[in-house]
Length: 482
Ligand code: F0G
Image (tube, rainbow, N blue to C red; front, side, top):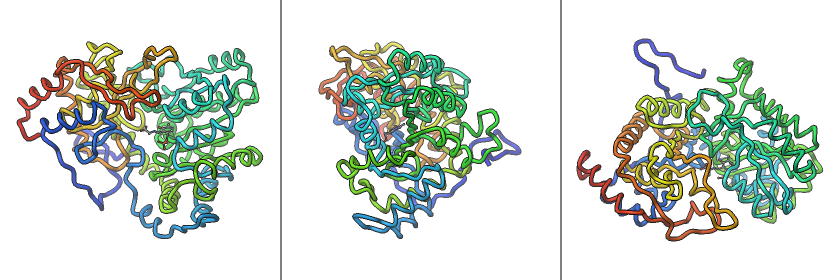
């Protein structure tokens, strides 16, 4: 079932689960939040979780586990080598993807490190529909380049196109010809995309892109980290897919690729990762990197308990009742914000609701990080922690100039099965308040700027005393205690 129908009222998404374990939350007063934000260097990655009311930073490793996942942890088989847990995980992945060879890794970026280390050479090129921060950082670390060839429509904030993560096939063929096939390390398809609003890619587009790659003898790699949402969209939005089961669709997708890797923190609702390699020889050529960087070949840095939970999580990903919840909550949140005239990325995608900061705070110049400033404002005005997905999340050009992101987004992630609809309503309400007071928000500047992945550990400060003024206005409306 993909949607519960209603009789007497407008339908809202209904949770197909009940809550059995809870974690208490607290809502600090705004004045205290201001101090916490200062202590965190105006970087939401640096906040302490206990100081946050709605943690919408990410869905990575923070999705709620099911009773079946938790109970599977008890049978974990701890062994340095040959753990039975590993074979159960490998067999489950083979059952679902049709690929028998599994290289375990501790999380998604570790898979990216292994794949890039094996295939990227200096000045080689990796084609992507869109990059993910760590996927790109590993390519450039090795002297490679990334060509992002998402269709132009993928970067348009407002749209009703169902698959804005699609790659531009003509651009791919031109790129292959310009670069020569030998210089292309691989084509990496992200399904769905992370940095452009969780937008999905269609099966048809993946088929065409991988056919092109095969024509030129280029290795194909699927980043399946966000596949659960993408599967939902293929099933519910793509022509001819409604009657296929999620298992059938997954198999059809995986059949297109030489390598499928995933972050288990998203795909499988646990914590871990893995690389599935179709070709036996290729698999063996990558094997030695696992004990070197991750751990022995039957755990790869993962806890066996998490591996058991993931094995159940993969099965749950094949259940429409389970994977519907994320996209439906996101869609609800996006539509409500859109109805109030708040600039959001439409249609709603996977992972979270995405606010278009370029339009929300259009008075803040891109070099003062509008999305970074807005994400801080949302914490100050409601204890909501989102994530900047814009210029702050980019790295500077080699000459030190700023590389402006194609989109300035604030992502409000909806970890699966974690929040209730009333909490989502609270977020919608506070975003509206911030929107109505957006002129009070100013820019940010770096006071400590790391060279690589600066958004994780960088420290910033406001360009004026705008945070104080914003908090004053907030207290005038909501009082001292929230
Ligand atoms: N690929 C995609 C598409 C991702 O979204 C992520 C992580 C990774 C790879 C890396 O996986 O975190 O397990 O190392 N995205 C997280 C996020 C961090 O918050 O969007 P990881």
